[in-house]
Length: 347
Ligand SMILES: Nc1nc2c(ncn2[C@@H]2O[C@H](COP(=O)(O)OP(=O)(O)OP(=O)(O)O)[C@@H](O)[C@H]2O)c(=O)[nH]1
Ligand SMILES: [Mg+2]
Image (tube, rainbow, N blue to C red; front, side):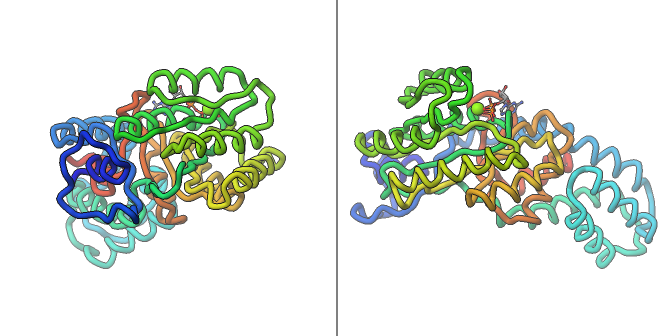
C-alpha cells in the first residue's frame, strides 16, 4: 500500500486505490507523513539531486582521502590523519574516533585505497544514521495534529513549513498554517505566500501581536474546522537569548491550554551551514521545548553536511527531512544509506 493510499484511507479520501492491508477504521494508527513526488521514477533524479546537493561536503572528504590514501598502509600515522580529516569535515570528534577505531581494528597494517575507505566509511555512517532516519509521524486521532516549528534566525523554518504543507496538502490532508512569527510583517507575508501557493489557510495577526495568543487561537480555529494538521511558525531566536527562549516556552504553555496533548511534534529546523554550532542549538532548544525531531536545511550550499552525522551520534533525535534546495520538491525524507553514500561521494 502506498503511503498516500494509507493516508487517504485513514482520512476518508475517495480517489485512492483500495488499500491492500486492512486498517481498522475506528482506531486509526499513526501514519508517516507522505513525501511528495514519491513515484519510483523520481528516485534516480532525487538521488542525483541529493548527490549534487552534498557535493561540497563530499568533495572535501574525497579530496582529503585521495591525498591520504594513495597506496598507503594503514599505520598509526595514517589513522591519525584520517581522524583529523573526518573532524575537519564536521563529522565530530566522537564519530571520527569511532570510525577510526573501526579501521584500526579491522584493517591495521594493511594496504588500503581511498575507495575502500570511502565504502567502509559509507557503511559506518549508514549504521549511525539508520536509527535516526525516521519520518514525521502524524497521529490522525488528533484534529489537528499540531506541529510547532522552532529554530534560530534564518534557519529555514518558514520555507520548511511551506514545503511540508505542500506535501501534506497534496497527500489529501487539510492543513492550516499559523503565522506565529509576529515580530516582522515580512514573516507573515512570507507565510501567506506559501498559503496561497499551497491552498492552505493562514491564521495571522498584526505585527507585534502576542505569539502565544495567536498559537492558542490557531488551535481553536483549526479544531473547529476539524483540520488534520496545523503548522505553527515561530520567530527565529538565537539559543543564547534567554528572554526569547522563555517566550518559546510561553508559546508551548499557551498551546497546551488549547489542547493539553499538543504540540504533537516540535520540529527544530537547523541550517547545516552553521556546522558545529548546531550542537548547542539542539541542546538548548531540546531542553527548552522538548524537540521531537530535526530538519536540516541548506545541505546544498555547504561543505559541512557531516554535521548531521555528528548530531545523530550525539543526540539520537529523529531526522525527519533534509533540504537540498529552495523548491518545494527539495525537502525530502531523510534516508540513511542514500545520505551516507552521497556524503562520501559514492554512486
Ligand atoms: N539553498 C537552500 N536554501 C534554503 C533551504 N531552506 C531554506 N532556504 C532559504 O533560506 C532562506 C531563509 O529561509 P526561511 O524559511 O525564511 O528561514 P526562517 O527560519 O523562517 O527565518 P526567520 O523567520 O527569519 O528566522 C530563504 O531564502 C530560503 O529560501 C535549503 O534547503 N537550501
Ligand atoms: Mg521565518
